[in-house]
Image (cartoon, rainbow, N blue to C red; front, side):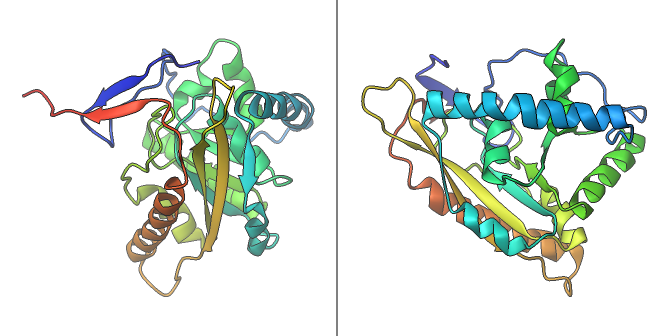
Length: 260
């Protein structure tokens, strides 16, 4: 449990407050995003469906009393792939919540290389759907192809546009529209899932209630930059409105000016 009660910040877009200390591996052109072997497909099924789902369910329910509101909206995507954007406020829970929000869809999460760099779990997280951000142009081509392929397969691709973890933060930080380039180019629907924090008596942790909104569709008759800007605005407004439902402050965030 994060025991901090006050966190001072100066930059909403770049400050990072995760307590994890991991040396990230380099994601270069040799990193394989999609494995075609039967063994790799089996390990994905095993770790994702047999091992991870039951443990994740117990963790989210037991620690946070997790609930999801509005998940039925996801059926409006039909059988096609879609993108979900959420606020980044937990180390472990944020890797698990999308799986239950989009269930029974297979979920892939765009993550920082830290998530595939841990000594043991780093070997498992790719089988759980982690798509680490690339470090060079050659790797980016493979990454982009993986995102496109998973979308074409009808999967859910999850993005945390805030990028950095702010534990238990109850507002939505400003984020750029760059991560909306994927659905803008693919013509895929966008949904948002906003994790809100609700007060619970007699519990150390507040309840997390995940609120789903959407779909937001890109206007394919407009230029790509215009499409992604519009998607970003719709997502940001929806998440900001939902964040107002939080009624518990676990950690107080105080802004201070940057030192010159």
